[in-house]
Length: 163
Image (cartoon, rainbow, N blue to C red):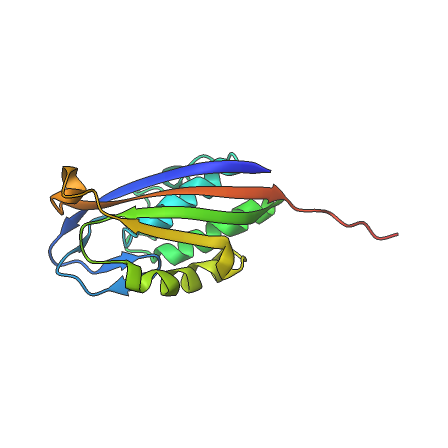
């Protein structure tokens, strides 16, 4: 078993859609980034990549590559899962926290979990997503951006041999 830690942050801006946990949320602003800037998925990808010693999301999906411009982060998560499988790992569980003052995320957490679990080949019960505020402190408190943290447990897949 191995564990990994991930963190991501993106700035909130006008004229962008807000994508978190693979779903589009109604909000007055969205997150700025080369992709759809889904901080939750990006933190999860970093946690998974770190656990398998596959570097980080910026290494695997550089923001200088045109192929990733505006990409749906669900595609990045699926590809991350495939990279882990290629290295002989399966995902045990994810525990993630999103820090945002607005919008309120609790009503959307079950949909996020249901969206993300199949992309990682895990059960919905293996994906924990929590939401918190920073009590109006710092850049998240001033609603300048949103951050996310994630930890991941991965396990070597058992290889069964034919007798």
